[in-house]
Structure formats: C-alpha cells, structure tokens
Image (cartoon, rainbow, N blue to C red; front, side):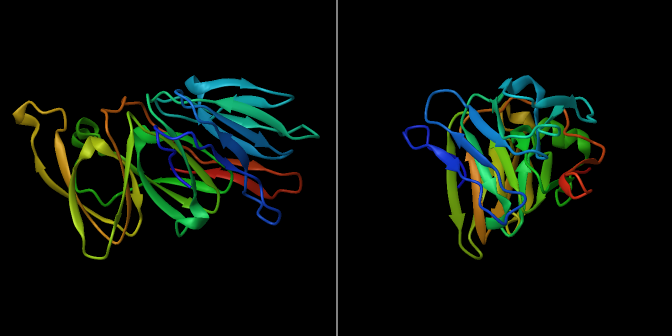
Amino acid sequence: MSFRSTSSDDVISNQRRRGRGYDLSFSIPAGAGPVASVELLPGQGLVWDAGSILYAEGGLRITRSPARGREMVLISNAGGRAPARVHVGSRQHGPLGAFDLARHNRRLVFARTALAGVGPGVAINRYGRLSRNAVSQEDAGLTMLEAEGGGWLFLSAAGGVVEHRLIPGEGVTAGGDRLVAFSATVDIDEVRDLSAGGMQSSSFVRLTGPGTIWLQTAFPRHMADVPSMPLRVERPGGRPVLNVVR
C-alpha cells in the first residue's frame, strides 16, 4: 500500500489487525483532494501537520508537538473510552500515501516536504547519506528523513506519483525535488549541480537498486521542519505507543 493513482477510483484503506499494537484503521477515499480519515483507539496518538487538520470527532485532544519552524500537532485519544476519528488533509496539491513500515523492512527514506503524518510506533530521524551541506539541501529539495519502526507513515506528493521498482544494480537519474520516497535498500548519490541553468530542479541524484522509488510530477511546496525533540505518548501502564525523535 502506498499512493492511490490520481486516475483511479480505488480507496486506500486499512482495518486494524489484532495483535499489532501500532496498527491503525483509516481510509483515504478516491477524489480530487487529499483527505484521510483515521480512527484512534483509546490511548493511541497521531502526529500530523497542524495546517492540514480538517476536524476531530469525539473527545480527541489536539496539542502542539515540539517543532522547529513547522507546526506539527499531536492528536490523541488519551482520555477517551471509545474509538474516535480525525479527518486530515495535506498541504501538497496531490495524493496522500500510506506506508506500512512493517512491509518495508521497517525503514523508508522520504523527502522532508512529503511528510504528512506519523502513526504510533514510528521514529523519524535525519537521513545522513547525502554529502551536501544543509543550505544546499534546502535549495535542492534534498533534505531527506528516515522513518523506522512498525507503524504507519503518511506522505503527500505534488501532482501525480510515479512508482518504479529497481532491480539489483539498476540505476536511474532523477531531479532531487521530484523525490518523494525510496526504499532504505536504494543507494543515492548526488550527480551534479544544475542551478546555473535556469532549471527548476537544482540538483540531480542517482538512485541504484534494489528497491522501490516514488517520484512526484510537480514541484513540491517547501515546508519547515519536523519535530526536533523526542515525543512519546504512552498507554496507561507506561507502554509507549508513539515515538518521534530527531
């Protein structure tokens, strides 16, 4: 499960499975706008972009998360006794995607601008394998993050999404600002700087398999940062259900 095709009427949905403490029930319906409906059980929490929350049902609580630049909020069913739903969107003009990290070897690399939400059991860290300084990464849209864990990661894209599976040793060259996400098994290397050519893509990267890559067809909106401090939400009894770290 990842992105729904913009030309498809399919609905991306998941029903929480028993025995998986980090699982979520949600649906991303077909339609022009990127909208998701996520059910939170008592004790569950979800981190989402504050500017993309439509409305929360029942007794869901919305609180700010430690953030640097970008406002991310925690939506929690901390004191509720029954499941409740939150309805959320995205700042990008394109589809929403849902990634079960347990099916991606528990790791996925993605562009900072693609982050929409983080479910329980997922840690977000800086991805340090690009040898560019922070300013250049900002300009080229190459600030990448890595998600680890066994929960759900929600990403958004600009325009449409192209998914391509790379066989071992297969390589492709892509515009840095067209990257949405790629498997952690994919190697990435900077190719060259084309900023002087008047092109919108200021950097190109070489992606080498094995693994899957997701590319967006439009230029993304650049956003500020993800939470920069550890964030934990615990069930009664101290069991952690959400962990977002630097």
